[in-house]
Image (cartoon, rainbow, N blue to C red; front, side):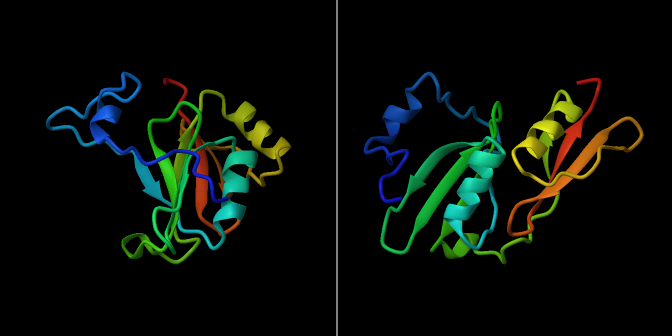
Length: 150
């Protein structure tokens, strides 16, 4: 894909003024992006977008040899990034473990993913907190987490 999903803004102050993108308040530390190492970005996009239902927010090639992709789970303020050509983010594919997707109904969320072809383990009760585990095509692991009181 050569056409970016999101353009890099020419004027960063225009992004800050966007009401859909509130400013970062002094003293805040916002976790908004988690790098996930993969071998094939296009295959990973297919998994995260098509099987998991993440929104493809960014797919840019700002310079030759660099690609930056961001995908966001529905309702989340934190995205994942898939990159190539960014030495500071280089990790062996499949080494991220235990990323959590918090859900309101774990049985429904699990069934939806299974219907989309994701191999998700059985729901496990860990003393009132419920988990179901799965992995992306590179072996990075994820879990659905349900805390009934939330």
